[in-house]
Image (tube, rainbow, N blue to C red):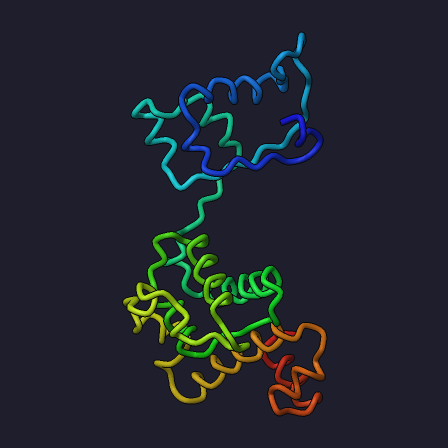
Length: 224
């Protein structure tokens, strides 16, 4: 709290806070004061608190495992985020962002993934949500020897993922040829931009297009 004073403190998985610490957190939130170990007097802090949890805090409060007064202190504004399996249309954009982060962290060139990987990422149920997606992609980047990820780099549980029909719907593969081509182009050019960033000359060379043709495609799909 002292380090975050004047800014924002993020408390992840606040539902796992032990019962013995819950009243201490409540006291700080109510008084705006902390007392460091050994300090003679409390110290004022000015902190914006954002918390997150995968648990139902109201249900926990009803069972007595989470303080109801602490819940109401934390729940000034509540945003419920659906699990990743219910947001399949967001998976590829998240994956592209995480792939770029993983490549940078591992000092590898920015990468993309082929259509089969896209299908599997969308088809998998992701019980571990965004963290699992991030871990899977970081592992794939570590194992990859090229700039394009292929299905063999994904764990067995992802390769055996269900609901490929749902994946094909998201990718547009169940639609007519014209619609499917548009869906594929959007994914392809989005990854191309992610890989090459502002170096559109290299992106055009990689795609086998002239710069003007690439610009037209990016404008067509709202990517520039």
